[in-house]
Length: 323
Ligand SMILES: Nc1ncnc2c1ncn2[C@@H]1O[C@H](COP(=O)(O)OP(=O)(O)OP(=O)(O)O)[C@@H](O)[C@H]1O
Image 1 (cartoon, rainbow, N blue to C red):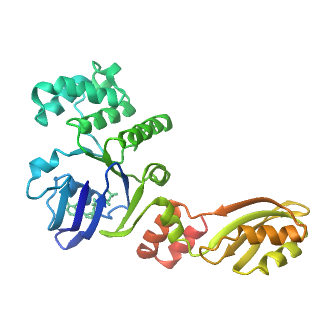
Image 2 (image 1 turned 90 degrees about the vertical axis):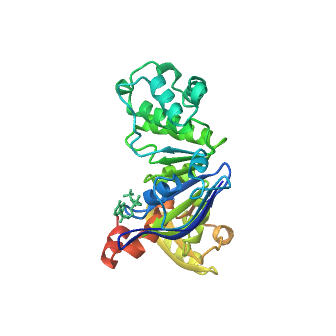
Image 3 (image 1 turned 180 degrees about the horizontal axis):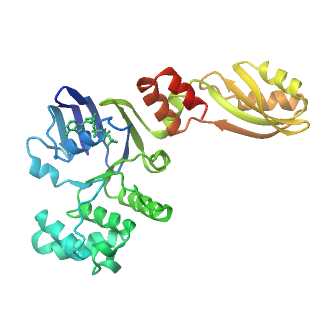
């Protein structure tokens, strides 16, 4: 749906975006993550045709954005972080105005009704925008991006400033819109990206530091496999039994639950599944496992690993480790 090849943009001597390439597949939700100043907005602005790259190529639905900007831009709907709404207009007036800007002409009323239906805002169509909640304003911004039925939606921080109920509603809406649209979503809320996105791009200092599914990112950046187990039995014996197993790198008591029940953190070689050997060894010694959890790296851990390793001093890293 979108092909970005060797895209670069400088502001004076600053390389805001350096030689990045990626694609957006049909029906995919692609998350854009990165610390402030990583180059996310610059990249999104180039894809939306609002900023001209110094180098590189952007194809949208097979159309070269730089060669045929007007044609290519018809396939993109953009929700900026602060949608430019006109507070004195009613919802219907504003959406008809957006349709007219996109050259929809005679069918503007029909198209406005269609996008209002998709965003669940028909019942407020005659209300002034200024009197609506932030959640509704965000829906109007998304409805405006949907006018003209673009194949791609680019959503910049779509849930910022919303209350928890509104956040869930907007997330559900994004998920259902992905059935008919490919979506690029930038967000600082990592659990949101984890829950919504099929793939994630982590940008750092103008470059793509990682691109994969949230699941694969968690596995790839994990340097060891980790487990938490609660076992009933004499502590020293449990520690001995676990540490004697092949592939175990470390084991320590992290919780005292009862006189004879402790929680242990077990670390093993990367990509090694420790669950079965642990189960059999402890069962053989008649020390029952009462709970066992595989500890995975969260998207937040991966994000911090990538961005902090390159951006911060050893001292700051130690501080984060202890948070
Ligand atoms: N118009 C501009 N003129 C000069 N420098 C700019 C301009 N716009 C952005 N920059 C710089 O380019 C770099 C990338 O900025 P960009 O806004 O793309 O990052 P971002 O990842 O979107 O950050 P944020 O999450 O804070 O929005 C930053 O160092 C920023 O200060």
